[in-house]
Image (cartoon, rainbow, N blue to C red; front, side, top):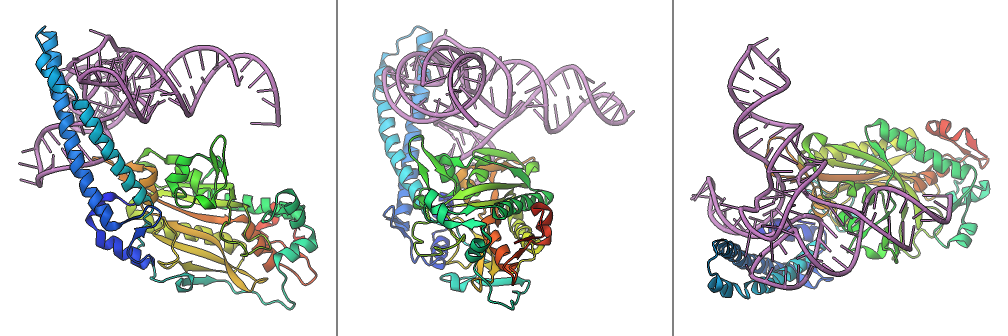
Length: 429
RNA sequence: GGAGAGGUGGCUGAGCGGUUGAAAGCGGCGGUCUCGAAAACCGUUGUGGGGGCAACUCCACCGGGGGUUCGAAUCCCCCCCUCUCCGCCA
């Protein structure tokens, strides 16, 4: 969420940012309001606020006067009759004010973040910029298989039975497949904690406030699984519960930066991606992920983004998986992000780089929404922290990359050196 | 699921419906004393918002939302959360 004062004072900057994101001039279809109308609304809000406060002041002053008279056993009838109805008037004005504030807030929640100046301008993923590549896609002296074929041949991934148990877009991992899933998870958590991230294991069902805090609601309700009766949402990423750890808190300056890493299952409806990646593990309703989350001081957030991305990259490097780093362009940038790097790993089965991590700086966008602030030593007032997060890494997709990159001519899969101790074997045969 | 207790400032903990933004203690900060420190003493110590160049000033906030009243932390209603005991259960 943007600051209404920023919107008020910089409508042109906002328009420019929206244009770069490919949203033309802004009108939030969902709330049927455009920027000019909101600016007008803001003017009315402040006018009304002044009126209400003036009345409240009158109420306070006169009520005190009445109290004084009563204590002195004097007659207060005149003042009492004068005050009759003032509260009602306040209530009326206040209701109107509340309505305006609701409208304004709703509107603000549909405005995306302002892209950082370093973000390449472009209209869609074809305009994303490759920042660097690491490793060389290996050549194979045989036609490399897809991971779902490898998984089936080795008997470690069972899609048929998974669809019997749950449905499409689920997988049943078996034997070495299940072990590999667990090995990756432990490997990633161990590496991340060695880099100073504190391991946390959060709730994976969360309430509405948490989903709103990180920006999944109200705009992306269609992507979420929800439990109806006691109302809960299944998290689409650990970003949600972990960022919400500090919702409505005022942190001390010396607490920052805070680094967390968390393994969680993630759940996504994948509505609107019918027909995309229908086979294999790439796009599942339920998948495992290890996440990196940071709370930092504003002046540090872009350095921290580079460091966070490097931490995620190191996982791929240790697994010796070729990848590239892509800076998302303005048109491809997520709603809440000011800047995002995607890590794309090489998949021989698809002869393509595929996203395996997404590392973003949200600046104060999430923090304002989730009300996460900090207080500087010796300074009055508070500031919003900057939040960042990135996958470190998506486990299912990493498993795919391992299977496809380490497959052998004889159908077996070698285990990367870094995972050997976690797997207890050198190869899956 | 049944029965009870409770939610007040960074923490502990008071608060007859009317100078209570809120006693007191602790903690924090500043100062006196000291070679320095501790102790002692004095002072200070919330968040958000509106107006103003500023000094400053006004408004809101005692779990959340309604209500009663000239006036609510205090009275009434609803909701949420935490804790204890019983039952059930991984």
